[in-house]
Structure formats: C-alpha cells, structure tokens
Amino acid sequence: MDNNYDQQNQNQGADQSGGQQQQGQGQSTEKQDWLDKGLQGASKKAGYNLSSQNADKVGDFANKEAKQHEGHNIPGVQ
Image 1 (cartoon, one colour):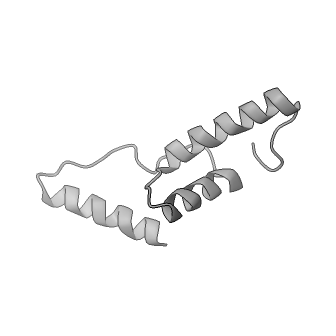
Image 2: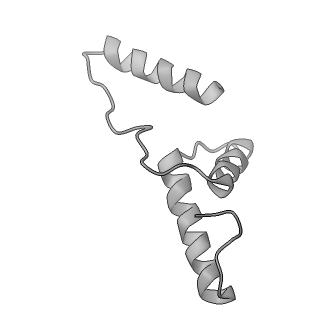
Image 3: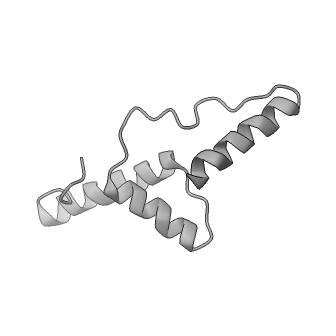
C-alpha cells in the first residue's frame, strides 16, 4: 500500500513540475513471484529502494543460477 502511495506522489510531483511524467514504471508484463517480492522487502528493510523491474531481474538471475548449479528452478518461481 505504501508503494502505491509513493508512486502516486512521484507521478503527481512530475505533473506539477512541467508535465514530465515517468513512463514505463509499474508496467511489468510479468507477475511478481514470491522471490521478487521478498527481494523488494529485504532491500526496503536494508534501506534501499529496489524497483519491481530490478527485483525481477535479480530474481531471474538467482533462479537461472540455481537451475545451472542445482539442476532445477527455485520452487514457486516462474
């Protein structure tokens, strides 16, 4: 809920400062899985702001590496 509130505030601020909107944010074609959400939660707790796109990239990398070394994907990750 806080994430949506923060994103709305960012968009409103962009509208008021010359009409420059950030396009492409939040328009992910892939549904977030538990790994992406966990990475975002851990980064927020550590004081970093990890976007959903970057969390998806990191999660995909971790899943690829797990498959390469273990021979199977992380359970529950697409």
